[in-house]
Length: 214
Image (cartoon, rainbow, N blue to C red; front, side, top):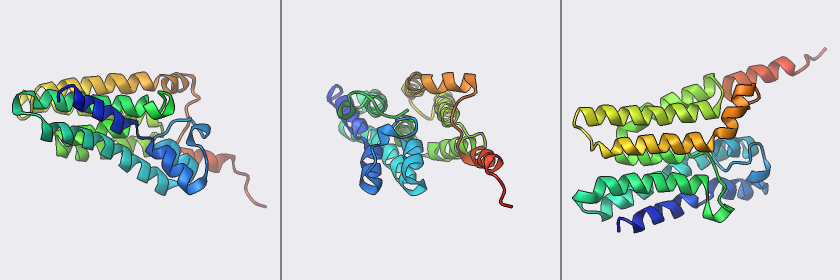
């Protein structure tokens, strides 16, 4: 089971929810829109806020379900390791989907969902932090990496307080590495000053370039 559950997690993560929702609601191929990724941010660009939120929720649930299955199926002595492996596998599946020729999203929502299954209060840390950075700073890549760093630090603190198995720190570190690797193109654009803006700054930028009516 310790080998089978990460495979299940990978398949769950591979389900291209954003691609499915955007095609259902608009008929578009999400891979041909914006960044070409299949996550919530690009789904929002393609089909609006509602579809973006639906995609994000579904991507969160993929990670949560993968970890829950490991938690339920494994004995106590291997449970934490199985949960970590299943969560990381779900991120891999989302980013390199077997259904999309090993392409996909950036993994932030799925990483958050898996972390929430390990420690439910993570929701109160990651969502305000990631959402705030996304809205006020405007870069999805920065919000994603900040959330992953927060997950790692939270697990390290909980392990130091002996409230959680130290193996969960490996999940945080692994998730941060996987997300940073998938976001390499975004980080390169960010350094060049070419990364796409969203949120408040994007609205202000759009308002500045829109000509005033006479």
